[in-house]
Structures are given as C-alpha cells and as structure tokens.
Image 1 (cartoon, rainbow, N blue to C red):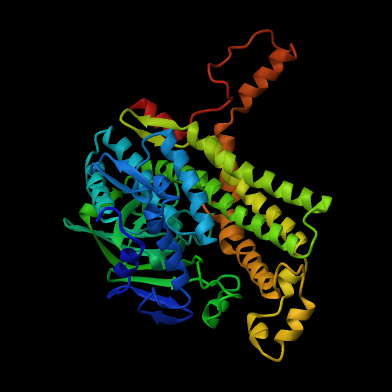
Image 2: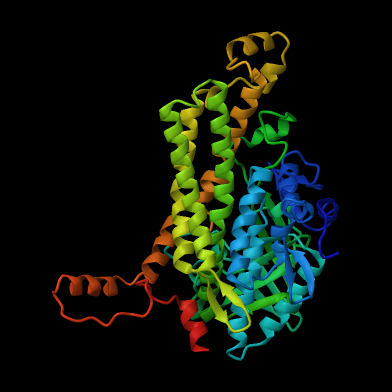
Length: 502
C-alpha cells in the first residue's frame, strides 16, 4: 500500500463503528458525505493526491530508511535540513490546491517529535519507548495512515497545575500489564474527524506530582469511548446550503473537542508513561517543528489571497494604480518573510543524534510563528482594502440564481467587461472565505501555541547578557571580551542540552 491514492484514503474512513462524531448536536456516521465535513475530507485527500500528481510528487514523496521504500512525506521522519525545507515547500504547494488547512501536519510533527524524544530517552537507557515507536512508525508508513496530532488540553484555570485540576488535562487512570486507561479531553484538534488515528502528547512541562498526565500514545480514532464534537467556524453554515459560490464545497478544514471516556490504549502504543522529566522536552521539540511549518502553509494561503486581490483589482480596472501596486507589493513582502523564516529554520537545522535526528532551528522556528501571528492580519487588511466593501456585503449566490434578481445584480455589479458579475462574486467569496478563515487568522494566532509562548521561547534562547557584553566592549566600558565561536548570541535549548549531554 505505502503510497495510497486519495480515493483509497477516503474509502478507508467511510465507515466508523465505535467513535461518536457530532456536528451541531447530531451524530455523523459518514464524514465523507456529510456536507459539513466533506470539504475537510477533500482537503485531507489532497495530501494523498499530491504524491501522485506530476507537479508535486517530488516534494510529496520521501525515502524511508525504516521500511526501505518510498513513502508519503506526511509520514516521513526528517533526515536532513533539506528534508525540513522540503516540508515547508510542500505545505506552501498544497495550500495552492486546497485554499485551506489540509490538517495532516500536526500528526506529522507529532511523529517526528516522539521519534526524537523516544530516541533521546533510549540513549539514556529507557529503550522500550523507542522500540515501540519505531514499530508503530513502520505501520504508519506501510499503510500511509492519516494521523491527527493531539497536544492541547482544555487547561481550565491556567494558574493551576494538572494535578490541581485533573479534569482539565488528559490523564492515565489505570495501568495494567496489557495497557493503560485514559480519561480527559483534547481541544481544538485539527482535522480530527477526517483522521484514522490520533497521536496524543502532553501539553506542557510536568512536575513529579503531574506524573499521571505525562503520557504519549497513539490510538485509532474508531475506538470505544472516544467522542468528537466538531467546532463551529466563521461562515460554516454555508457548507450546509449545498451551494458552489458562497460556501466552501471544495476544500476547508475543521477542529474538534476530543473526549476520552475511560479509553483503553494497548501498551505497544504507549510512548511515554509517567516520564514527567521529558514531557517538557517533547513539547519543546513538537512546538518548534510545528511553528516552522507555518511558514509554508500560511504563505501558501497568502498566495491565494494575493492572487484574489490582484484579480479583483483587475476586475474593477485599478490594478495599475500606484497605491494598489504598493499594497500588493507589501502583501508579497509580508508573505515572503513568513516563508523565508520557515526555510531558515529548516536549513539551519540542529542535529540531535548521530544517525539523523534533525530538529529545526528553534530560534528561527519561533520567529516564524511570531511573524505568522501578525502578517496574515496585515495581508487580509490590504486585500480587504483592494477588494472594497463588497467583500462583506455581496449578494448571495441564491440572489444571483433568482431569475427576477439576476439581471439587476449583473447590471449593477458589473466591472471590466472581460469578467462577468459571477466571476466577481466568485472571487469575492474566495477572498472572504480564505482571508477571514480560521485557517488563516485564528489558527495563525493560536496554532502551535499562543504568541506569548513563542516570545517565552525566544527569550530563553537569546542571550541578552552576551549581547550586553558585546555592547560594553564596543563602548569601551569593558576592555576585553571572550567572544563565542557562534555568530549568533543564542543559548542552547533544553532539548539541545539533553542531546549534547548524552
């Protein structure tokens, strides 16, 4: 199987027997046909199609040394800086084909984070996790499994630790010789209804008292005791209208609240159990991987928005106006900054083990995500300025399809004669649905951690004291300085310290 087609993936998730999935209070049995979830399935499907399409297959495939076969890159373990750069390029590429989040990245980053973490633990004598994980990885690669990653707990009161509010964090409730039982919930889980398996990770660094919450594992979504409540999104009701202009019948994404109601996990699927000292390391590794990837997918969606804004400017005859050219140019500069930072995080990668544990540059990864928390809002603002107020006030497609109203709409909303009024409405809706989406705005702020999480990480890495010593030396307040070998005034992360100590 190894490289599944998109249709093979869709057929594999068509029938579920145990999991309960709810949309607007009603249980959904077939996510591939439900109008609310089908666009998400199609976006997920694009990650499989990319491995078979001529323009993208070189990026979407990679060679696995674990099974000695070519695999879909979304199941690949990064073996070089070039691999990491290919990830960013692939995410930008597939964004052009979906106009939405394609929802497979979190599971991919989870694979890589657990691989590195379990490898570091093995080097310190705890080999069972790594051995289990490698066997699981082989299964995922051979079957091209659709994974969702689940890190974020509901957290409750943020000032309380997990052991002080157990209901707010997923926890181990029982350990047997065959496996573990877990209860709790994971929130805002991207693409969960369209996934085949969930890879679960702790959401934060733990203390010894939080041992029951320091757990990582994988489990099929279709497991007894798992319930999924799909969340609402901006303009999501349009998906239920069965239209082709106003909503997103082509591609979109979803997130959900995943409830684990005393769920059994076989021991061979458990990759961390009570190892509270390593939970923070796993979170740090995963977060940097995921933040690096945002430079690809968000710049790809930025390309869609720039293209739509440019087309709408042409439709009303203003594309050559200096102020429009300036706005388009500014959008490109912002977009390429996000992308370039993601590429930098890839090519200046960190090698954490001798045989190829490659981690992204943590400083550049966090800078990438900081840019992403800001620039999509600026890009959307410029696109809104170019498109005009019609982006928020356009008549519906049902008005356009009404024979009594259509002649008036075509007459009064007509722009340049090279384009029809329907062309204009289609482009307006595309710009609205992509530019104001959860994928481009909300996710850009809160995905892979809130903005403050990246600032904390950046402050941990940047060595202010060393930068101050440089300034004191150049100002002659101090007469000598011991210059570091590295050009950057950065400290090692906790992950790098652990890797170098082994």
